[in-house]
Structure formats: C-alpha cells, structure tokens
Length: 491
Ligand code: NAP
Image (cartoon, rainbow, N blue to C red):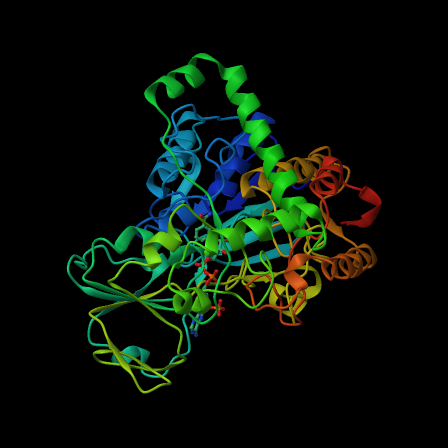
C-alpha cells in the first residue's frame, strides 16, 4: 500500500475524502469514525453544513417524512416540535449531530472540489482555489435535489420586481401586503402557498399540471410527550422503527405495484381530499388527469383549504412570457405581481457534476454518464474505483426515508472499504457486466411502477423510465446487507 496515502493523520490507516456536509456526508463521517477510520475530511463548498436544509429556507418548509422517522437511527431526537418538523428545526438537528459526534471539526467549509482523478491507487482532488488533496476512498454525498431548475420562459430576466428560485429564497424581500406569483405546484410550491396566503395581498399560483394531494395533519408534540420520549429511549426507538415500517407498508409498497390495494387506498384518500374544494370550476382545475402518486405525492394538511382563499388566483393558462410587471399567459392576460417565485424544482441528473471526475484510463464521469447517469446498485460506477455515492443515480429517492437509505448504503460501502483497508486490493469498482445486468432488470421492474402510468415527473429519465429503485424495501435491505464481491473488479 502506498505510504503517503495511508495514515496522513499518523494512524497508518486508510484516508477518506467525503464530498458534501449534508445529511449523507455527516453520516459518513460519524460511521467511518465509529469503524476506527480517523483520517476523514469533508469538503463542503458552502460555509455551513446541512445540504438541502441549509439551502431551502422558503416559508413553510417542512419535511413530509414523520420527524421521528426522519433522523439518524443512532441519534434519535425526543424533542421534535411537530409530527412533520419545520426545516429550520431539521437544520438545527444536523448541526447538533455534527457537534455531538465531533464531525464538525472535519469539515473544510468554503472548499468546492472541482476535479477528482484516480491514479496510482488513490484519488487526487482539486478545489476551486487550486489546493489538492489525496485519499484512497472518495465518498460522494452531494445530494439529489441540489441544482435548481430554472424554467425556460421568455423574458424571465425582464421582470422588474424581486425574483428568485425557491431554493435561493431572498429573505430581504418584504412579502406582507405584496402581490406574489409562484410558478409550480410541486411539494415546495404547496408548502409556500400554505405559509404565505394569509400574509400577502394577492397570490397567483401558476399551475402547469394539477397535483394529487394526500391530507396529512401536522399536530405539535406536547411538552409531556417530549418529556416521555426523553425518559424512554426504548419507546423512542420503537416509534422510529414503527414509523419507518408504516411508511414502507403504506406508501413504498404501493408505489412499486400500481394495482395494489394500498395504492387504491391512497387514490381514494386523495380523491376525498379534493372533494372539499367547493367551487366546481376550481375543483376541475385542480383535478389531475393521471393516477395518484404517478408524480411525487404532495402531502399537506391544508392545501385545499388555502387554495380556496379569496386572495388566491389559480392560473392554469400556459405561461407565454414574463414582462417587467408580471406574467403574461397564453390567453393574453397579464397577471401583475410584485414578487416572482420559481418553485420549479431541480435538475436531478447531475449528482457529482459539474465536478470533473476522471477514472481508469482517463475516462470521465461525464463520458460514462452519457446519455444518463448509471450506477451499480446506485452506489458505484464501472471504471471509477473506490468512488462510492450515497443517494446516487437511480436509487430509492421517492420510496423510503433518505436517511435510512443512506445509512444502509453506507453499511454496504463500509464493507467495500474494508477490502481496501485490509490490503486485499487498492481499489474496487463494479464490473461492466454486473452493472449492465442490474440496470436491465431495474428498468424492466421500473415499468411496473406507479411512476410509469402516464405523467411527467422528475422521477423519469430522458427515456421516460423512472430513475429510482423499483423493488421492495426488503430487497433493498437485503442487497445492502453485504456486497457481492464477485460483481467487482479489483485494482
Ligand atoms: P417539482 O416537484 O419538480 O415541481 C416543480 C413544479 O414546477 C411543477 O409543478 C412543475 O410543473 C413546475 N414547472 C417546472 N417548470 C415549469 C415551467 N417551465 N412552466 C411551468 N411550470 C413549471 O419541484 P419541488 O416542488 O421543488 O419538489 C421537488 C422534490 O423535492 C419533491 O418532489 C420532493 O421529493 C422534495 N421536496 C420534499 C419536501 C418535503 O416535505 N419532504 C418539500 C419540498 C420538496 P409540472 O408538474 O407540469 O412539471
């Protein structure tokens, strides 16, 4: 083993570079250290950890996975304020975990890795300010919903008022008493609508496609409940596990079998929820023409109540262009607004990019991922030894809690790292045959899922195939339990 890669901290052990200090990056550092790997550094391009919870600060942001399920299994939190925690509380949770497990000191803030190259048994990374670093293992924890997607609407730059993407919220802009327009009706826009409708003067919601909305109440936890969870860690764990299990049984299983009774129940609940919209014309505008959960289900305690507010215009005409004073729709109407919010989602096929990643024989990740990203079990890529991703391409993004996914993926990755750490090889990357066979079966199974039943959504790749895990949670858990080493090339 090459000496200068090993033990730069004097431990004589393997060195690991993690890219990104969001949920998966913090997890990686905690777990690596738990396994006795101390030479770990996290590169974070921003000046604060937290990933998606740092970036998304829009009004109303909350997680629609139950709070007691949306936390690390090794850091349960008795103190959540609500069944679905608001974003700032989740951000504080990750900061607290990083402090408690002393991984905050491993983070190099403001350091963006722009290039990584595999050579001589290790990865050399380069930051935007020209510094370099080297490690045998490179963990990509860069997130999925990270790069904002901006709509291609003529005149967008001509708008005279404040305009920003939902993931780049400008908190200096006063909204009280203003006319606000929001483009999009995804999970983000729905949360913004609920939070702002009673604050603004007028609210124009520009809907291209109607959404199914599952009613999910969001009560607070009482002080007594929080005290009880604090006093009873076993009970808290049972709650965490039960909630995860319930999500799997009620939602995840339904998604992969569009004809299942569980899916029929979801559809029924969504229909019933919609029926509370009193005005038939408004109800018609809000009625999707595709099956519930084909697009990512929206969960909201009160969207249909808020959308009936007298100061809300649901605009369904096509967006023709943006003008200095508002949005001109295809019916010729100019919707005058003071503030324009683009709740238009994310470019979901980027993953590690725009970083330049160079693997074996000079092949770049861009080349390997033309026409689309591909990874064996969503974790690793042929020709890129010891590059492991958490929540990488075609993984279970829409099915289970992203935290549980990352935890299980990490346990799988750790076993690959063990091979290198034990000196049995310098590097591991999946072989092309195993990757191709995996991808073919994934694509076949994906065709049976609810996501393929006829809608446009961010789950679909350029071919219209769902870019996600199409099997059960049990299968995911079993696959993640232990890598099949015969599927890997050794370097
Ligand atoms: P999204 O689901 O991709 O929704 C984007 C919205 O913008 C859609 O309504 C889309 O319309 C519309 N849109 C995009 N381009 C447009 C254009 N050129 N003209 C008109 N409309 C346009 O994005 P998101 O709401 O930010 O949510 C993304 C994902 O983040 C969610 O699916 C979810 O996984 C996650 N999220 C989670 C939570 C949570 O509580 N856990 C909260 C927010 C977000 P079409 O439907 O017609 O494409």
